[in-house]
Length: 118
Image 1 (cartoon, rainbow, N blue to C red):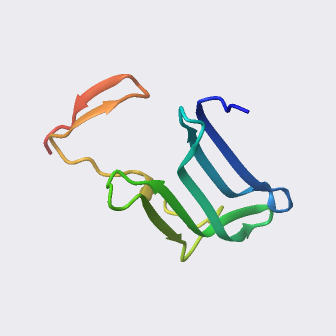
Image 2: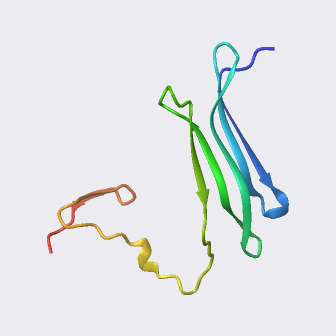
């Protein structure tokens, strides 16, 4: 049987924990019908941060490397603290200051401007 060349993505979800992501894998099918894994996520630990909302607190991401001596790169993710719907959250953390003189390309508004000098 010959496989179709191209890209294949798979996702593993946990319906018992709000369909939280448990893992994913992206791979390509090469012309000789072999498969090559390009990326893989494995969630090792989930935490229910508020009722019904599960968040990964430990996971690994493996991706195909561009360095021939190291075929894959691995990123290890560990969350020390996770919160949701925190009434004490300071909204200012979402407003990054842009230094004077920087060019801003606002793709949402479709405008470009330079931040004025103070």
